[in-house]
Image (cartoon, rainbow, N blue to C red; front, side):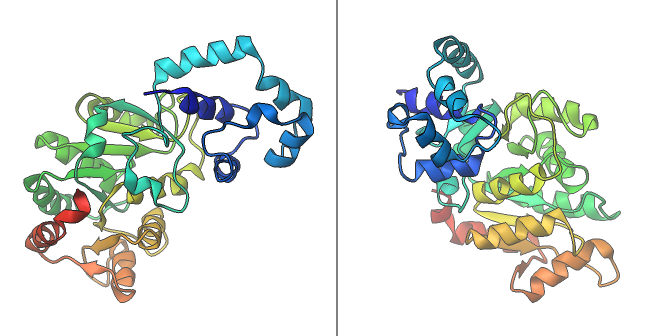
Length: 296
C-alpha cells in the first residue's frame, strides 16, 4: 500500500495547534491532502486557524526536508493505522468524529474480529466480578472480542478475565504508550500487547489528560457492534460511552441491579431510556446469533 497520504496526515498532526477536528474539517475538502503545498502561508493560516503560530512557521514546516525525513523514519517505526488504511475499521469511519490516526501494539488482525465492548464503574460492587465473568463467558463462547478501556474496575476485570480464559481483548486507551495510566496497569497493558491489541489515537509520548478519556470512549463504542454495561453510577464516564453508542446507532445492553446500589443507578436510568436489560447470558447469545450480519 502507498503510505504517502498516511504519512502526510501523520506529519500534519505533529504540528502544534493542528487538532483532530481541524484536520477532519480540512479532509472534508482535500481528503488525500493533495493541495497543501499549493497554499500560501496566509492561506494556511486562514484554513487551519493557528492563532499562536506565525503563518510562515506552518508554511516552512510543510517544506522542511530534514524534519520530514526524521518524521518519516518515526512514522515507519510506529506504523500507525490511519483512516486511509485498508484495515481501518468501517465501523469507525461511520461515527461522527472518527479517529484519523490509531497507534497500536499487539495483533492488529484482531481489529477485524467480532467485537462487543464491556465497560462499567471504576469503583465496582462486590458482585461485579461475578457479573463480568457471567457475560464475558458468553462472548468468549461466541468468539467475540472484548473491547474495554484499561481503567480501574470493570474494564480491568473484563480484560483480565478474557485473557485468563484464552479470549481476545482490545484496550482503547486515552494516552500514549510511553505513559501508561494508571501505572498499576502496566502489567495488564503488557499482557494485552502480547496477547491482544492496544489502540490509542494519541502519539506514544502523550501523557493522559482528563478530557482524553471521554474522547476515547467514542472509539470503544465505535469499534463495537454493541456495548454491554455491567455497572454504572448515574454520573460517570460509562454513561458518556452509553450516550455515544446510542448516537452511533449501536445496541446498548445493561445488567440491572438493586435500586439501592449506587453502581446500578446509571444502568437503571438507561433501562428507563430504552437500553436493553440483560438478565441471563442466553439473551446475549441469542442477540449475537440473530445479528450475525452486523459483525461481517
